[in-house]
Length: 262
Image (cartoon, rainbow, N blue to C red; front, side, top):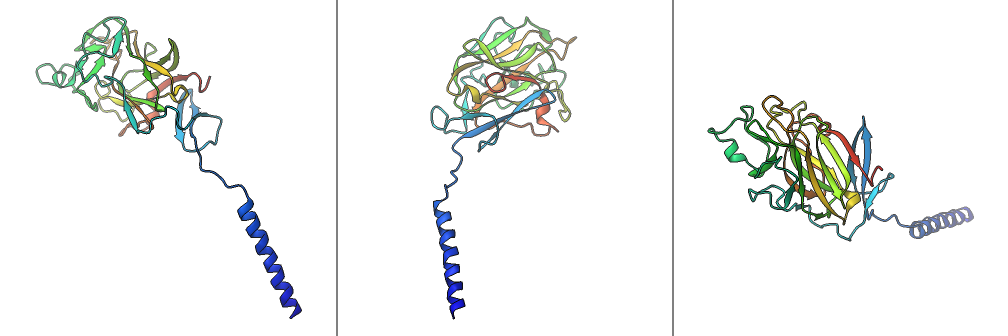
């Protein structure tokens, strides 16, 4: 009988210890920040958003100006007005107006490598290639916009060329600069198929920035891979991927992100 009492007392003490540690131990709080992990593979910098802090990263503060919406359009980011309103050119590199994709794909004028423009959502896009006619180099820069999402997504056609790239500027300083190569495995129409692209801008959250498309070389029939075409710009909580492309990250040839990776 005495042994049984001792056993019950021991069990009771163990239960008390368990209850004490269970309710007195600090509770693990759910993550309150979104973390953008920046990695470099073969010289290519990419970023991935995850809902916890597990690495040396740039964190996005909750609240502040972070949008509650999944995406925010860039003003005239798809050139839906049929004009470059909201964008400024240093020269006439991108033509006097954006390309009308419906008109460009019509049987009467289709001359873009005998392929129609595909994988584009809007009706107009900016391009330095105009039916094989070369125009002068130049830049296309958006009006200032406030960064309220961690990514700026868009669609692009661009060869591997040091003179063709897309930038994000803050106060005239280049903060993100990316070169692309959309002539990749899995793209059946590299000269006329737009691919998805993303610019990581979490380090610029709540800042006013501009998007600049740089074209210091232009396309022609004799230099068919020296033009750039862009459009469908919008801010987003998540980066986009390229369906049908074996490795979406391979379209990023070289990316520099100041304020994230130095």
